[in-house]
Length: 274
Ligand code: C2E
Ligand code: MG
Ligand code: MG
Image (cartoon, rainbow, N blue to C red; front, side, top):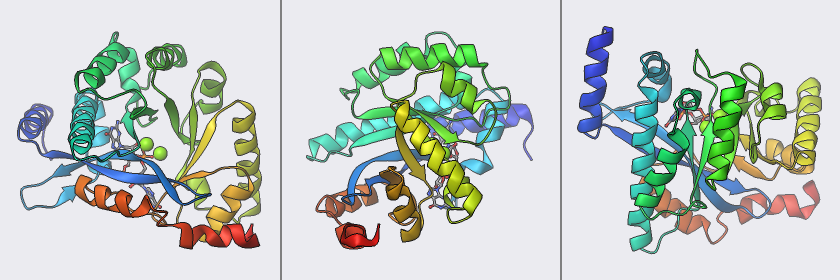
């Protein structure tokens, strides 16, 4: 276990050394099976070639106040990938970047993120943001509401991530303006349980009435897709479609899926199964 100073040193060395990578997990319009874009998920590449998942370092970096720096690194990588992709005639769709709620406490973050995106010649439609609720010392709701407002004023769509998990999400939903609500995997994985189904049914309906688009996380089975579509949730992300992929794999995946890779899989939906 590294102490605080060692961890900070290790982190900045990793940034300089390009050890942080971004993997892309596709988001799919479940009606047609066509890709909509992807969520950017950070990985830490180790010397032995293995990758550490966020569960192994995000909480610690948040505790040390380093997560904002990492999120900006992730955004830089995403913008660079989008820019390089364009040169090859590839459009990744909208890439959704996770932001720690700790950003909300720092003045000027929304403008800095906008400048970063503009500097790379990336449009606001190509990047959106997800606000995560993992931070222990999460920003209070007023600060959060202002931050979300600034991002939206700067032209970005924003998602409330992991809806239903963590504190004060209904209150936050009441006070802040989001564009997208991401249903947490915890609920999606329990579809079929009568109480879960009631909660999802009413949550999706409420989101619709509030004008929010709903994205379901952790979609793994066709039965979950049937349920979600029957309840008017049309965008899905999960292992059913794809695990997170490195950029080159994502380019190949999306090029193949662009011709409705999943039509075969989801045609069942159109054939009266939902
Ligand atoms: P998240 O933003 O809710 O991301 C979704 C997580 O669910 C990802 O885990 C993804 O790999 C996993 N997942 C997606 N579909 C399925 C599925 O069908 N089945 C299962 N079992 N899992 C699925 P991952 O990549 O380990 O990320 C965990 C969390 O770490 C993320 O949850 C997010 O809160 C945080 N995170 C990841 N990258 C970043 C980042 O760049 N910045 C910040 N602030 N947080 C990040
Ligand atoms: Mg997320
Ligand atoms: Mg999530």
